[in-house]
Image (tube, rainbow, N blue to C red):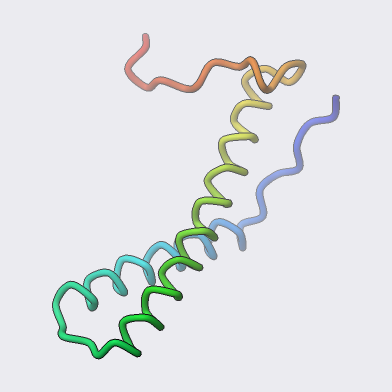
Length: 84
């Protein structure tokens, strides 16, 4: 099995930008009284941002699993920072 390609720095930047935009969107929705149309548009944008972030996280998790056990990425144990 070949090693996974290194993660593109642009993907990391896009993830961080999407996450930041999602956090700002949630804050705006919580702190303001939006009309129904604006609320729906914001919700749709939030769902799109969430899906983008979730996909990026799944790809990162797969890459970590491949690095932990290149032969069997599906059986690799998840990383636990509290384990010595």
